[in-house]
Amino acid sequence: MTTSANHSWTPAGQGRPDGHDPEPSTMAIATGLQLPTGFSAVAGDPDLGPSISMSMAKVEKVLREAIAHSDPLADATSRHLVEAGGKRIRPLLVLLAAHLGDPGRKEVVQAAVVVELTHLATLYHDDVMDSAPFRRGAPTAHEVWGNTVAILTGDLIFARASILVSELGSKALGIQARTFERLCLGQLHETVGPRPDEDPIDHYLSVIADKTGSLVAASGQLGAIFAGVDEDVQDVLVDYGEKVGVAFQLADDVIDVTGLKQVSGKSPGTDLREGVPTLPVLLLRNAVAAGDAAAAAVLDLVDGDLTSDESLAAAVTALREHPVTMESWAVAREWSDAAIRALDPLPEGIVKTALANFAEAVVSRDV
Image (cartoon, rainbow, N blue to C red; front, side, top):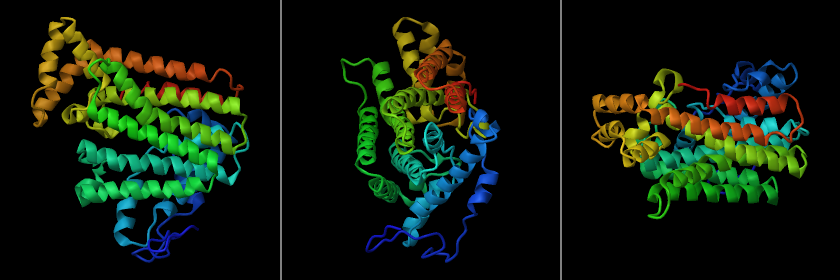
């Protein structure tokens, strides 16, 4: 395993502060694994289901090994989000794409770990920038250790992803570098907002394409590359990933005003309280500009003081009941439908079905 001079990677149980290996076996992980909503076709297939479950279990073990650290603080901060769980959608897409070729190559699992590490690194940074108090039901890293430690932990996790991807060759490294550039640009553009001559909705769609679509697209592309899939199929998966990533984020926008915390894990109104410009609010502002008096009343609530739970609940309820929320669902479904159409060139089979089902599932969530 790769090491550095001062802060070495540690195989599970070696150099850990507690001195023992808490990780279950790969088989135990695979037995308890539940695939995310939309992948029921995978779970029900007698060949693909067990194969994906075992590969996801390997991903989980390698992921935990990759963030393990001999330094007690770095080990604790790096494990914080991994142990909080997550859907692991990006590595799952790597594995699914690989089943269009030879999924047994060891590079496939390593690529899956790379995309999840990259995703985790961005979450540490996003939570600091958004001042988010919780992530996956647990206090965010910056709430526990402070902003500086959280940012440096994100950097450290991305460094681990970079080491792994460098072992996969120059093409994978190039994909990772370009994806990370887009992730940074998306965050930058979200932070500064649209230019005076730029449509706010166009700006927002470009932001989520960079912040979400780029890494989902890279997931499918890397899975296909290391399974030996033809380049034209790789291109299909990139197109699909860009579109389904946007659909996924748009759906999350709507869930912010329709969701139930106990099911989705996301408290309604989180984005509203943090002032994040999401599609329902952008459409609401357009409605106000067009003279919609009802929209103006809702916007007064949304733009008001949302520090109290009562004021936030009132704004969420008003926005949920306005037609812009259903309009936002419709936009998300357009992106989902486009993602499904992008799959047309793929051969019929369980992988294509699973990818299409996932695209449908991300916009069928009502929570």
